[in-house]
Amino acid sequence: MSAITLPDLPKVKPLGSRFRFFLLILIFLCLTAIWANVLTYNIAIVCMPSNSTHHADPNHRIFTNGQKTLAVVFVSIGTIVATGPVIYLVNRYGTRTILAVLGVLSSVCTFLLPLTIKHSIAAFYVLRFIQGIALACNMPVVGYFTERWTYYKQKGLTVSVLVTYLQLAPAFTNPVSGALCGASGWESIFYFHGGLSLGLFTLYIIFFRNNPEKHPFVGRTESGKIARGKAPGPKPAVPYLAIVKTMSIWAVWVAGIGNFIVLEMLFLYTPTYLSKVLGFGVSSTGITSAIVPIAQGTVKVIAGTVSDKIHIPEGIKVRIFNTVGFTGAFIVLLVISFSGIRNGTVCLVLLGVTGAFIGLNTGGFFRASHVLSKQYTSFVTGMISVCFSIAMLILPFFVDGVTENNTRGEWEIVFVGTGAVMFISNIFFVIFVRGEPCWWTETSATDQVAPAFGDAEKTQEKPAATH
Image (tube, rainbow, N blue to C red; front, side, top):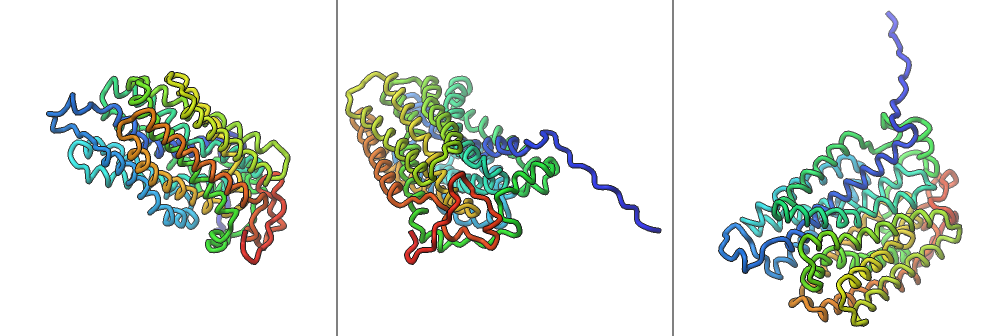
């Protein structure tokens, strides 16, 4: 009896040829959840009762300045330790399993934090370390999704949306946590975020696939559009040594450190500054501290879209965006420090303006990372996680060491110091960044690969001493 051959059934396409945008939003929310789980501690510590109100409660822990510093440091150590292995695993196996496992781990750790805060500081540090490991996957996922799932003319928009998880997390977590604290106590902050992130990663496990062409909800039209501008066939091995010897890549990473020094100062310590220095209450601290990330996130998405539309050489474009963003933010921090302004509302608005300027970085070093590295974006952006972690490792020692009494003068030192690091990093970026893909992005299929971004059609020549 001859076998009966059934015709191929058409793929189910619930969103037509736009399913990639659903996944973009889902990935964005998952990355936001991982970062938000880390940030829960920073608003909870403001919400926790002070020594004077709970000195006799055996289940209440009073964090010393040293313990507060270590709570942040262990996250950064976890991210630094995990970044290399995570990049390798993402490049080899894709992000579906890696992000799912780490996202669930982050959720469970967040659930358990209140228990460890009350009973075991050592266990608390272990959970913070694991949260840092989970955080290490965020930037590699940005690079992987952008390379695998994005139409090449929309890469700027995709990057700007995905990296805005850095802003959405505090913009959501701070006001929600402030409200939860007032209504149900500081423990509810961790329970709410752990449950919400677990729900998001359940959706991720259900809907995400590593390859568009294998997704049941992606039709031929959409998968063909995504494939444009990409080399066919198996992905070549990542040229790690060549990448780390390239000065234009180091320009991106150095700018990343400068960016995150100020960014993390604003996101991690704004609740403390608003509460201890400007005198805002816990509930209002949560709401007002969201102003900075909202301003930055809005500008970031706009900058990413605009940078796709401006038709000037990429080298000039990324230098302009980065310089305006970094220099503008530094100037505003100087104004806060030296103008003598004492009005809390004015200071808050100026911090929002600082964040807005930093939002231009999607057209700066973030864009440059994709222009330069093309098919190896997941490694280059993954190493930006190390920059993020280095900033997080250094910053607590500086801020907690300087702001022992939380006076205005101490915080002015913090603003000037972090702003100066960012300004100097931009000088390095402007000198060494390039606007063309690096020579190691060339493949045997170079002729078939469209440029990743508008003007980046040429390729940097292989130099004797790679620049």
